[in-house]
Image (cartoon, rainbow, N blue to C red; front, side, top):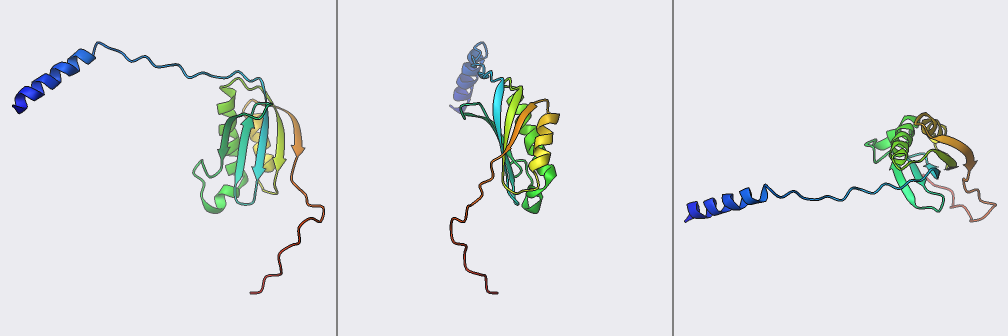
Length: 144
């Protein structure tokens, strides 16, 4: 009985060989100008590329590229994240960007240089790091 089931199964498989599956081609947006937001902290650097209305085209972070621990905060990790995000965005037709940088991290300048090296024209660079005007009360002094 097992032989009969095996023979029936192999016959059904040979019928399917003639059919080919139709896959939809992945649609690519055409966005000539975009906005890059670089969030550079001491521990990580996140590069987000969006269209002018704010819809994200691509993003990369140092951690998503496999950098772990203290290596995530290095300028090299930020450069790699910016390169990967820019190449993905260039597939969508991105040619020029405005850059907004926030945070005190070491990967700020290297991420901007990597964007320019990846073939994306950097139009403006703006620092949008939030600075308190004597807002919240700081936490009490640490006792060790």
